[in-house]
Amino acid sequence: MLARPSVSARRLLDDLNGLAAIGGRPDGGVDRVAGSAEDRRARRWLAERMQARGLVSRTDDVGNVFGHTPNVADRRLLVGSHTDTVPAGGRLDGAYGVIAALEVLTTLHEHGHPAADALEIVSFWDEEGAQPESSGGMVGSTALCADPHLAEITGFVELHIEQGPRMELAGQELCVVDGIVGVDRHLIRAVGETNHAGTTPFVLRRDAGRAMVRAAAVAHDLMRSVSDTLVGNIGSFTLDPGAPNVIPGAAQLVLELRSPREDVLTRCAELVLEHTRAIAAEEGCTVEHRMLSHKPVVAFNESMRTLLEKVCRSTGRPAGSLYSYAGHDAGVISAHVPTAMVFVPSTRGVSHSPYEHTPDRLLTQGAQVLLEAVIAHHDSY
Image (cartoon, rainbow, N blue to C red; front, side, top):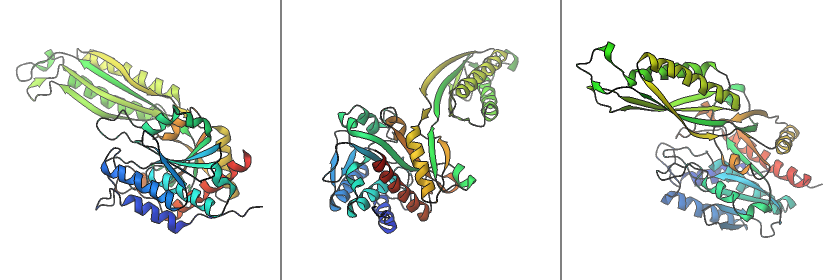
């Protein structure tokens, strides 16, 4: 029986620091937006790291960076994440999953373990969609789904920081992710009558701004009460024409809802619209509604999740489970190959921030679990 190799904590952390220096900020954050000079440097750096360790690297037409051994198998497991960041982002979001994948492949290759040849690692391009002209992120993973290369992939595993507080609050060091929540975005618009704010008595106003402000307050109450699985946000609010001395003739907001239950998403939107129409009628206004986007709930592959749970138990690190409330490349890939994710906790739930942090011990532990999962997948395939 082959000995179980261990990842090098020092090399893992050194590589994380090396990548973080590309686009690094004085406050500890990272600016490495997709398409930037820093993004290009990071992808070159990653390819050079692979080659220096006796691995083969390639970059596809989109910008995804792949790595594998010289004797790579025709069918293989894909593991990785992304290296682009949001502006003033953190050093771990995405980068941790890529560097951990590199460490796992390096370790297996050094030890001559057969699972090394059945593994390919990837850094997807433009997961964040942070540049102004972006189509919304997940560009590299979406492109791979249309690439014949995907037919050679037996599964995909993404190791990631949680980017939220749930694991830390529950005292969990590892979580096998059930899936990714559905996300709905709604544009809700109240239409009233533009008029002079100084000369029009309150009783004669059809103030769309007041109607929408009242509706927004009710919407927040509804989001908190409909289900404990639901989170939501009103991140955009516009008054038209938006002048101090003009009663708004129109006002609109964008409502975002997230839940692992489609019925909860639908019910909350219905309640918000019902109350908004009633409030608007009281203010002499009408309501227009348009769904801007719908991302359905993603459930990860049960067999892959079971494999990861067994790995965690066998290494003495039983894992919890949760849904991811953030989007990931794994959500895109899961429509085409068996997919799973593993989370490590985020300190205070902070992410997309220079203060993003996970203790080194937990980063190393997550990488070791990933290595064990790669071996287990190889042995079972």
